[in-house]
Image (cartoon, rainbow, N blue to C red; front, side):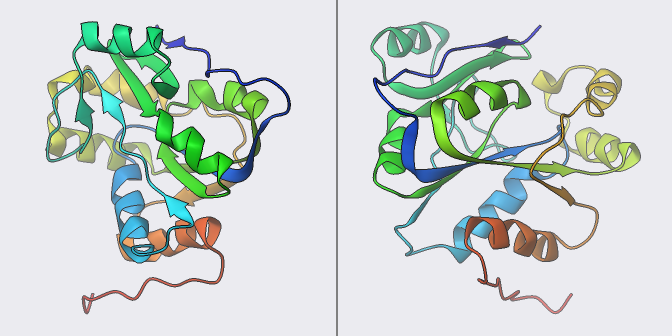
Length: 201
């Protein structure tokens, strides 16, 4: 069961004036791959921020997160150190408080989050864009099998849950070239900007 944690409230109006782009989608859809390509394209642009997620799981080749123990996570929540936090699949996730600060400074913040935080984020932030990154079930299953991460749990269950997504603001079917699909995400993050692929394929 997924438990959604409350975004740290601030008095007054919704948090702005910057934007928060929530990248959601099933495991194996390639969310982090696309985000990393867009991050590279935005390198040196201080109007866009890509906060590193904090997770109660060690970082790996498939997820470059900042590790925190369960006890440390609880202390950080109590001290108001997170902009957003939630629990899913037996793990706890958070965005650093700096993400909230970036939005207050007018930046665009791009984050990979659980779909369960969408409604609460819309309640708290002024400009929210939800981007669904997905792929057909057979492709998701193959990617999860290659990743072989123990915390992914039963692949079949993850695939069955993948179909239950509310209507997003944009959808990316990530089935071809990652560079091509990252251009779709970049157009949302920073319109009219293009990624130039360094490969011939």
